[in-house]
Image 1 (cartoon, rainbow, N blue to C red):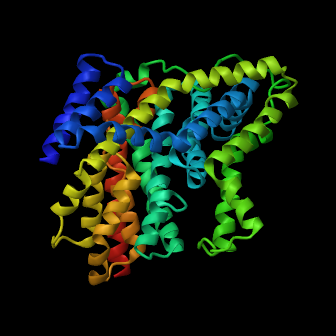
Image 2 (image 1 turned 45 degrees about the vertical axis):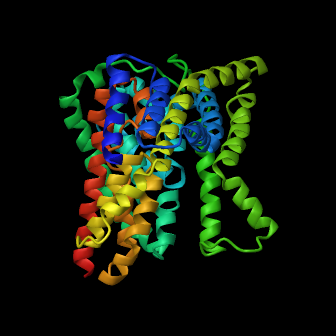
Length: 451
């Protein structure tokens, strides 16, 4: 019964958005209420679930998105994004632009949450696309592929790190295997897939997406734009802060949170928390892209206000996705999937991947899908003698599959690249599914080599 309700709920959501052209945020909340009733939830708890879903989804994201949008707009308005884009164009040339984006996204993606990575990279991707006169989606797909792979495969991201803890896997092995599998996966799901997507959905590549975080297209003189070094430092400041924390935790604390943290431990952890890292980075950007560039307080304030307006609806839509996800979890869809696979005889690696895929499609959250799948297959893994590090990547790759209307990432990609729901399904959803399939293929290949 839960699967029937879920399917009908997703169809209702698509109908409201595509057929009746209802605002996406309103459609998500309406669908969440209807699905909650369909799942037999107590009527008094539906509103609470929706509030909790929006709150948990936006809790840290509101901080990260708000500060990230301001930082991105400051870099763009000061000419920093222009400097970065023209320099990358000079270094890589037009033929290797996608590789430049993949490299940048992969480096940024290792240290940053998926959503933060998108917020930081979007202004640069838009600026490079405009400068090189290529479709924005031509660069957006490789960016999305690189960020998704790091999100699903590599610690210190929440899902891989949490699964590694659940399965007692060596984090170093997960990182090593993850990078080995990630390199071909990113190339297939990024540059290679973008060529196919351009033939399948040509309209998505010919549109003129709005620039949500970089407000203008004006040309900057070299003398008035900030230098490449300062621009990159400002854009990557959050990455640097989070990397310092990650390296400190691995080297000093050996990846284990101390029971009695010292003052230094607490300071390092504070500056590496995404919200605080973005706040510190924004303060640095106010100096490097504002005061240091001789901008007036009025101009800096105008930039920040414009940035805030640009993400208001995006935040609401992501909150709506969180509400829908929470209704599915509280309504028992997660438990129904777990029961479906109890006592199965499939290979643990494939089973872990499959459970993660079904949970991901059902619930929308990659992290929730990964953790639920890990708890389910942990006993099977020890009996079959599977390397826990490979199981982490199998579950992690399954957890990014088939992102659709109940996933915040789906709506972010749609809004940023100004796509229709159908175009997003044929680009973003396909991209995520390719990553999941390539990830499983890589895991099975490494398992065959090492066993």
